[in-house]
Structure formats: structure tokens, C-alpha cells
Figure 1 (spheres, rainbow, N blue to C red):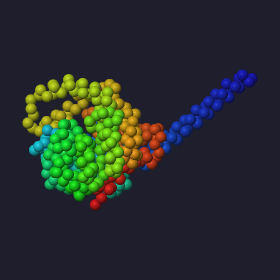
Figure 2 (cartoon, rainbow, N blue to C red; figure 1 turned 45 degrees about the horizontal axis):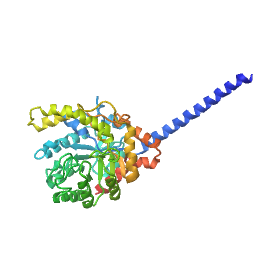
Figure 3 (spheres, rainbow, N blue to C red; figure 1 turned 120 degrees about the vertical axis):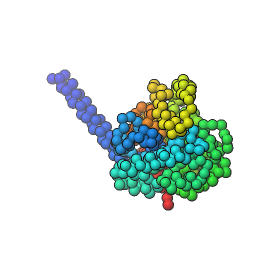
Figure 4 (cartoon, one colour; figure 1 turned 180 degrees about the vertical axis):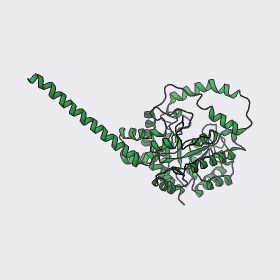
Amino acid sequence: MKKVLFPLVLMICLLILASAIMQAASSLKNETEKLHQDALVWDCHNDLAYRVLYEGLDIGHRLPAGHVDIPRLQEGGVDVQVVALFIQNFNYPGHAAEQTRLLLEAMKAAIKKNSDTVELARTGDDIERIVKSGKIAMPLAIEGGHAIEDDIAILREFHSKGVSSMTLTHNIHHGWADTAAKKPRWHGLNDLGREVIREMNRLGMVIDVSHVSDETFFDVLETSEDAVIFSHSGCRALNEHRRNVSDDMLRALAKNGGVIGIVFELNFLSHEYAQATRELRAIHRPWFEKLPPIEDLELRSAIEHLQQGIAWPLENKPTIEDLLDHIDHAVKIAGVDHVGLGADMYPRTPSPVGIRGAHDYPNITNGLKERGYSDDDVKKIMGGNFLRVWKTVTSE
């Protein structure tokens, strides 16, 4: 009889234990879901404007491909989506401001068309009001200071039309600042560059130092009275990509009160993936560059956009764990008050395994909790830190 009862008792105990484990896991999942809902979720960089202008897609519908649209943002609990007006480098000089105007008006029209779910946000106070109303806040940012054609009057124009932030360079030098992508021209900011920084301070525009050279970064900190941001960058200690940020820069950013938005872009997350991309592009780019010159710059912009994705490796993609590693390192060096998210998810490039698009942002909250972050710290990283900067810089 005892021989019969023992296996039965053991089976019952195992079932009770399994049930307790399942209940605990379910409770933890519910707590994490609630934390994500309660947090202000903020992505500080996305190139959605290109799809709107050059593909004519309606962001109010779930797009057949890509990372971001209103349904995906809603599904992922994203409250704030900063949309970059990315200006192709070949438009400077002469056409950069005009391309900015086209992207700006296209995005404002898209937001107006979907005004029941999204709203243009100019200030931190706008963001709080819009999110409280149940809508998604969409600040607009210029990506590339060449957009202002070395003319501060054009900077003022874009600010008056709703732009609240500007990335100071993209991958070219212009008339007042150096990029990280080229050998130094000005060795940082020149006099006009310092005037641009002071004018952005005066206007209440958020200064974005992603893409700038190290020298430009330190000149900006020396000149600006406000905190600055890296809207979409990674950590150089984990991958020595030119666009990633050194530990010295992270420490200086923390002292400045600024925030780094950790990028999801695979080449910034992984050295191995970046090397594979370079090898593939070495095959692809010479073919593309043999095409006849395209004099119509808007047509060229559209073609450049549509050909994105041809030269991207399919194997050994970085995962959400690599993204979390960059967050961990930035927190270790700069502190948890100075780290956020800046995905740089572009519709024609891959994203980390585990982050298909904006709808997978809860996976980041879950990953942070699994790594031992407190609820308060998760809320800071997911968006609270960027809100602090926006409220301080853009306050009227």
C-alpha cells in the first residue's frame, strides 16, 4: 500500500509545486504588464517621415512591412514617438532646407489626418497633456544641421513650424560643425556653430548630438546652457563604432544632465554584424554607384530610400539581449537618470531579434525587470528621463 501511495503523494506535490510556479509567473507577468502601462514609453528617434513622403503611406493603418505605425505604437504602449526629418546629405548645399520643408509638411499632414489618435507635440508640457488625453505625442526633430543651410533664420523658421529638436550633423560636415563620419574640418564647432547652439537655447530647442564628432560634442557642452541628448547612439565600449559614445562622453553627458537614447540599429549594437554589413556593401555599393547621376534630387531621395535593405546581412543578427547590454553599460557609466531609448528603426532595415517593431516595446520592460531594475528605474529608462529634458529645455 505504501509503495502505491508514495508515487501518488509525490505526483500531487509536484502538481501543487507546478501550479504555484505557474501562478507566480503569471503574477509577475501581470505586474510587468502593469508597469509598462504605467510608464511613459518614449522612442526618441524614428525615420517614419520618409515613408510618409516618399511612399505615401498612411500611418493610421497597420503597414504591410516596417516597424512603426499608429497601430503598432498603440499595441506596444508607446506614448511618445519622436519623428526625425532626415535630410539626405547630397541635398546640401542648396536643397536641404527645401527637403526639410517637404518632410515637415508631410508629417504634419499625416498627424492632422490621424488627429483622433496622435498629436504634434512642441514642448514637454504638450507631451504630458497629449498623453494624459490618451493620444500619442509626436514631437518632430530635424536630423542633420545642414537642413538650415548655415542660416539661423531658417532654424527659427523650422522651430516656428513645430520642430522641437535638431541633430546637429548627419554624416557630412557643413558650415558650422563636424560630423563623426569624416576627418575634422572645424575641429568641433566654429563661431557660427556656437551661435546656433545659443540660438537653440534661446528658442527652447532640444540639442541632439548623435552623429557629431567627439570634438563637436565637447564644444556643445561647453557652449550650451541646457542639457543635451544623444537621440540614437550606442556604447563605444561594447562596439567601437564611430557613432557610438565613449565612456568619457557618457560621464560628461551625465554631468550636463542629458540623456542618451540607446539605439536599436544593428551595426551599432554588434561589431560582428557591422563587419558583415561592410563586406556586403563592398559588393553592392559599386554597382549602385555605376548608375547615371540623377539630377532630380527628390527622385534621388526616393530611390535612395527604396534601395535601403539590399545590403543587410541576414545571419547573426543582434538580439534584444545585446540592446539590454548597451543599456546596462550606459547606466553603469552615466547613471540611470541619463539613459533612454532611441530606436532609429527605419522601415527598410532590420531590427534586433525580439524587437520586431514598436509593438514589441513591452519586451524591453520585461527584459529590464529580468535584469533586476527597480520599477522606478524602468520608468526612467522607458521615457521619464527624456521627459525631464524636454520639460526643462522647451518650457515657455
